[in-house]
Every structure is written in C-alpha cells, then in structure tokens.
Image 1 (cartoon, rainbow, N blue to C red):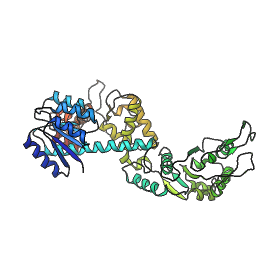
Image 2: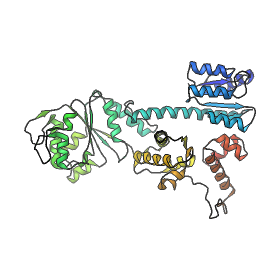
Image 3: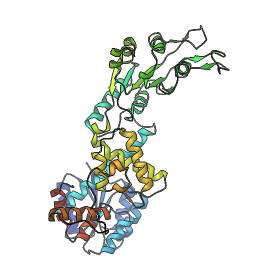
Image 4: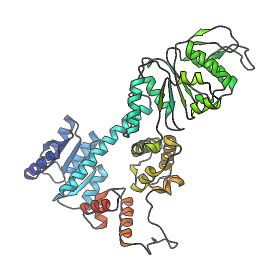
Length: 452
C-alpha cells in the first residue's frame, strides 16, 4: 500500500484530506509544518507528498527545496489557496510534480495522485531495466506485457538446468539479453559467458573461432589458439545466428554438443569440454531442415528447449517504458536535460510497427535526444518514418499561420488542446490555465477526444 504524507498547518483541512485519501486505499501520515515534513522524509521514504504552500514556520517552497535536495525521487504535489502563477511556476521549477488550487477538486486530486504513483513505479522499473541491460539485474526480463511476463517465467524455469536452449525471434528483439539472463540464473553464473556471431566469419575462420587451431594449421596461423569452446569451459557459450553455420561445420558442432569433445584445427588431439550452449537465430530453422541447409539432428540437439522473444509490435505496452529508459540514458550520455516525450511523440512511438524492434527504438531515441533543443522530445525530433505516424501537430499554412479553414469546432478545440499541452511539456495544470479552463474540464475534454 502506498503511503502519502499530508503537510498542512490547517488541522481541519488536513483531517479532511486524511479521511479522503484513506478512503482511496492509501496509507496516510501527517505533518503540520514544512520543517516537520522535512524531518519525516529523512526518517522514511514516502511514495508521495501533498503539501500546502503557506505555513507559519517553514512554508511549502522552502520545504520542497529541502525534500528535493535530500530525495529528488519523491513526487511532491503543491496545494495553494492563492492561485499565483509565479508561486506555482517557482514550485514546478524546484521540482514539484504539479500544483492544485484550493478549494481542491477531489476528482482531480485522485487523478493526480494516481499519476504521481505511476510515475514513481515507472522510475523503479527503469532502474531495474537499466540494471538488466548493464548485466547486473535479476534473471527475469523486465516488461509489463503478457508476452514478456511469460518469457520471464520461462527463463527462470530453464536457467538452473544445463539444457541447450534455442532462442528465436526477429533481429533486434534482444536475444542475446535473454541468453545473458539465462546464464546469470544458472549454476554457471560465476563462470565465463562467451559469445560468437556465426554469421560474421567465413567457414575456416569460424571453425578456428569455435574449436581453436594449431600453429601452421592454415595461412596466418602463426601460433596455437584456444577456441571459444575451451574459453567457455565450465561456463556458457552463446552461438548467435546459429542458422548461418555451414553444413560441413555443423557435424563438428553436433559432436561437441553430444560428446563434449572438440579438436583444434590441425590437431588430432581430442579435448574434453564442459560447456552449456545457448543458440539464437532469426531464421526458421525447421524450414531450413526441410530445405536441406541445416542438419536435422543438430536442430533437435539445439532445440531441447525453445524460447521465442516477441517482436516489439507484439508488446506495445512496453514501448513507453523502453522509450523513457533510452531517453534518460542518452540524455545523461549527451549531458542534456530532457524530461520526457510529448503525448504526440509517444503516440507515434506506440503506433509504429518497429521492424527493427528494440534496436530500432534505441536508435530512434538516441537521435531524438541529440536533435531536441527543449526539455521534451517532440515528433519533429523523431526519424521521419515515425514523425509521420500517430497524432499530428497543428498544420501550418504557407503564410506561417495555422491552417484552420474547413476544420470543425471540435477539431479546432482538439488541436488547440494538443498544441497547448505540447508547449507546456504535458503539464496539464499549466495547460488548463493557458486555455482558461479548470483542470477537471481539461481532463474531461482529453477523455472526450481520446487523448487521455
């Protein structure tokens, strides 16, 4: 259960908020002054803080500064009876999540609290995802979609065994990440993980890469070399693009898998190895067997357990999470302050089919971060094939003015809301102020136009 800290020196208002928020199934703690709130934040982590601006000893702005200095991750919602734009903007600049004016609209308060907590959960998921991509995470894959949850369960099930695993999926889906996750969850986790791209080498070089060679075995072999099987002894060998291995070499690979024996090129000595093999392919290996380009016995030896990594278009629920992770990573790498993506940009990302999968999304977000000059990535910074999809920005005529002729009043209103949200970086309180409507009215209009 999420815990909310209410900070208000008006006891009657604080009591009302406590009763209301507890009724929404949140745990509640209270503070009657900003200084008390700061002390409480030092004592324990809260999921969110709802704080008044005007208090006798320490006001909300000063308390907000101290809270953010101590723990920037805590989302803080500011309340004020004085609808001063300057005060609200100052709070937002310091790091407040949003602000609401008294008397509070309870529906808007509930909606804002839910979004604050969703924002916190997203940050936690991004940290987990970052750990996984950097090789420090748990065995399971991170993802909200049903397809990724099923894949995570399969990884946790097969990881502790020594069975050979064939990982299928389109290019760019993250098959090597799955292999790393299996290795980390296995009893071989403290041993080597060795990867070979079978499509990157000629047949002679691939044989030497896998099994090693003796000095003088072929032109350029000026010294003896251990192969990847020997390098992975006791650990895991990952064969990427295994479907590209030539037929003549497949027999030697099959012997290594079945007998645990390898021979260096140019040597008659048989070497024993203890290696778990994980293989990946974006080809239909069964079809290759039928076509005679892949050995049937090797196919079944590799496919003891088969895993399928879903394409990104098959798990669209994960796109916002991945996009936000890549955005923040490349913002940090390029030393830029980028807070997120506009609703139009995120809509374009979600609607795109991603033929290049996660790799394509990663490249798109790197480009967007580099190209953006503001705090939010817009459609303009996305690759052209993405910028043309999703919700469109307001069209511009040759004169430089919005091309509005012939549009219905509903469409004009929808575009005005969209453009204002874009300008405000998706800050709905500020957008409502600029549009001259309440935040509750804006929320209703967003629902009406399918933009929520």
